[in-house]
Length: 152
Image (cartoon, rainbow, N blue to C red):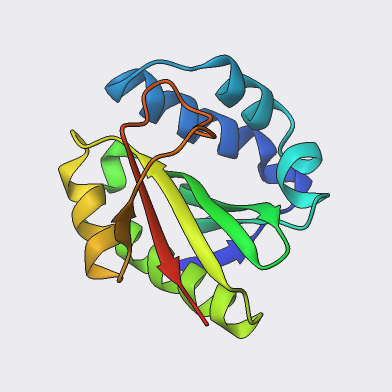
């Protein structure tokens, strides 16, 4: 199992993993459809990144860091294939993204999530994220919690 960075050949895996996850727990919102359909335009080109977990040449997990402003990124689009769940892949992706962000001297990461995703919220809190007021800039109708992690 290895964590690799985005390559255009993995764009379909990025979308498929996330759509599968969203349809299981919620629904695919217009914002999701746009970002997932054009990850290079919305995530990579503005300065963000996408990581994948690859096992036996198959992509089994993903996470994105989307630039909000200089030094502030949204940790988003984390998904793991159902058959690969229970292998602590979400925690490995979280650790990798935190090390990546710290290595770049970023100021903070934010997450929009939903309280019914108890396992995800547990991983975020365990990683040091704290709940903050959700504010007016929530891009997701399903989002009912906003968290941040100060890095510097």
